[in-house]
Amino acid sequence: MGTRINPITGLKEMRVFPKTYGCDGGVDYGLLYTLRSGTAAFYDKSLESGTVFISGPRSGCSNSIIPSGGVLNVPYFYEGCTCSYPLPIGLSMVAMPETHEQWTSWGNDPVKPNSILRIGLNFGAPGDRKTRDGTLWLDYPSVGGPSPQIRVETSPTTPTFRYRHSLWMNKGQSQPWIGASTVEGLQELKLHDLNPGRYSVRLHLAETGDAKKGERIQTIQLQGKSVLSDFDIHSAANGSMTGLVCEFETEIDDGTLKLNFKATVGLSLISGIELIRKP
Image 1 (tube, rainbow, N blue to C red):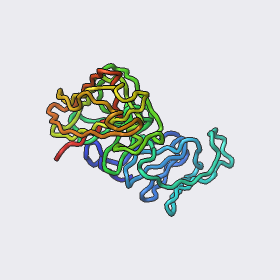
Image 2: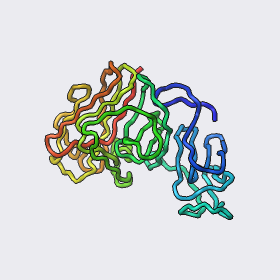
Image 3: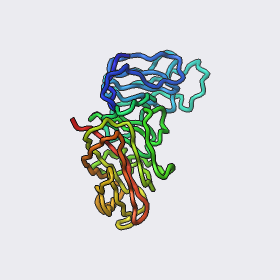
Image 4: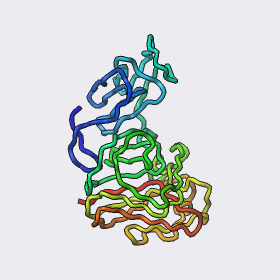
């Protein structure tokens, strides 16, 4: 399988990925590694994507997920198989822009103390997602399959997480699949095991609820300092379902990022947090 650079730690490691039930062992086609992992699945080595599950159809008992000429082919190879899968079909797939949804499972690698250099938390998302600019976005809480074992604390412990499909989003500063998912009612978040140093912190926000202008006002503190005061997402984005990105720099000395949220009107709301350590 070769090696890869872990996008969270920047360290070289063996390339591994989740594989569940399947008769085949997988086939390496160069940039794509295809396999049966319950359903048909693939791993994009050009992106180090993690396992992408094509939910519904199964592939053949011998590998039948074949990339050729820019098309990923999954022909109908069901003859004689007694496995019960909901979609006995063949299909072909072509690449879409990165604004479209494509959820993956990266794998449950342990994260060592003070090793995180770059990471994204996508609140309420249905899976992980690696972007070509280098950030591995993890669904939090983890619901879409195994994800790296990060240490996160929230108060309250069970805020309200919501996912909406990105096609509902308007064009904005944030990727639509980041902005479409949210956590509401969060008061405090701590992310541990960061490598001490100076970080760019990007807050991804979008009003995906029913709040209109003036109906959701919040103040956000980063490492104890207010970075957004009396902030109205709807007003700043000139409407709902439109992603915003607010970027700040901060020093993290003890390996822990701390965010605090105080809503004076309505409940706090945020879609995602992206951290990138400065050289």
